[in-house]
Image (tube, rainbow, N blue to C red; front, side, top):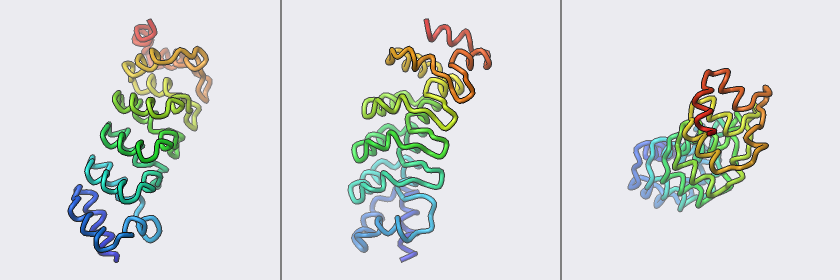
Length: 200
């Protein structure tokens, strides 16, 4: 049994769909056992997502859609990982199975949309907002909203896109846990000229 578990994780890392199919034929519950009997910190879905193996992810989700809700030791879901990496096809597969994971928070209180904004993953951002628009309003453990994260990570194109999508004046002027608005952050980081262009 442990050998099969090891093969499962190796297959996930390689995107080896054939091996996954063989393992599932041998033990139809192998993906269920991953959740209860394994000592690994993440599921095969996390591993396959990290590597961008779309077909492997699709097969796992077909066999066990509940894995989309599983969190790793950082409280990250596969959707968090796909969002960071910018794997739009995997993002689409994951949100079909479990759209509520758009709102899931990692150990820093960041949802997948926050992570996509930090990395400037425009297509992922559009997809996540389309599926769960309310994810935009979430704040991190430090009280930062998505606009704060854009300024802090110099993602001004993403910031501009988000500001065009949102007309909520309160949200645009929201303060983070330290009391800073996006304008304060831009001044502190000497990005004021860039921010003025975005806001113009």
